[in-house]
Image (cartoon, rainbow, N blue to C red; front, side):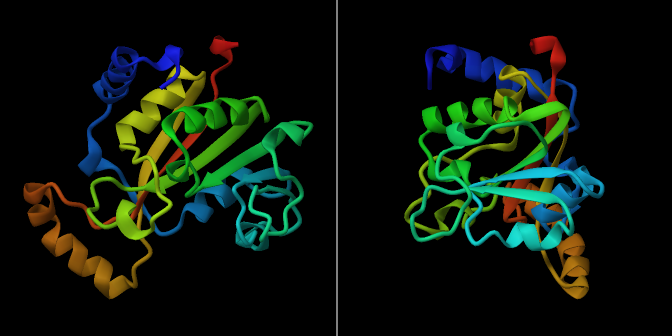
Length: 208
């Protein structure tokens, strides 16, 4: 981690984030991280999609001004590098991206995205759920696992205010009912069925 995020400071960030929250198993479940972006936008506005991939998110956003960043030359994107993006945005989305980066690069990216938010802008970031044994291990290019409290703590240390953290799993209704029935067993085993976690955060203006 960078000097600003030494091991001890990272551990302090985790503990501080957990201190006033009920814990992982109390996190609500949503079906798609994209739903959080749509809710954060609340209609028209400017959305920046960092690590946009096939830009599927844009098809959910109606008339919003949708700008994409993706370094993969095999993808079409408005920008290859976040540093080339000018202006501020109502929502910055970074869905299933930070796990592909080193810890240092992920922290730098999270910090840079804060500078792309307007005064009331919202960040939506998702990553594989480390409490699900298979979620992080599904692809060879995953480099860094992020616990829910670790991601939240780092965001708050970078000058964000975390509004909420959720678990993400898109199941048909019958399977959702079945999940509720076996939830106690999951808690005992310390293994979750949600494939991702997602955090919604805003700029904390007290941090500058």
